[in-house]
Image (cartoon, rainbow, N blue to C red; front, side, top):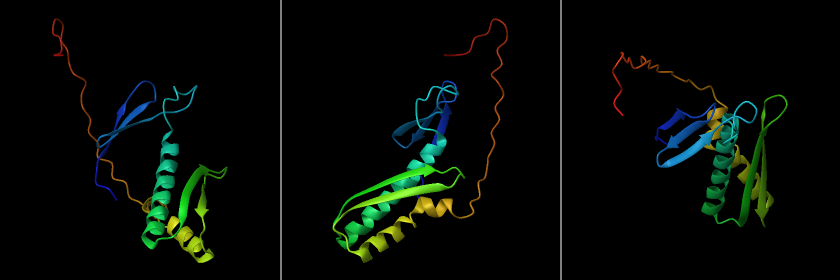
Length: 140
């Protein structure tokens, strides 16, 4: 897994600005809860799983020189809260290749992370509000 830090800062209503190295993303909730300016955190999780799956399958097929023309992944939460991942492989693939590619799809790093017990350590930092006395202004 990558060692870049992902930082999240507050935006308007529930919108969040996400910075990952030189990249900026937006997360939000749909209306009427918020303004729907980006995917929800759950949708971003599904996007991480889908893109990781697709990358792993592509890299494996390319490494073996298999004729995989396209790999597409659609991920969603079902009514029970399980993640359902649909994988579409396009190309003149042999049945054994398809079986191996689907096996690889189930072992991408994000899926392995999601299917094992994960520890999350929360490191709190609490800052007091800046104190402004009468007649004093904050520097700009």
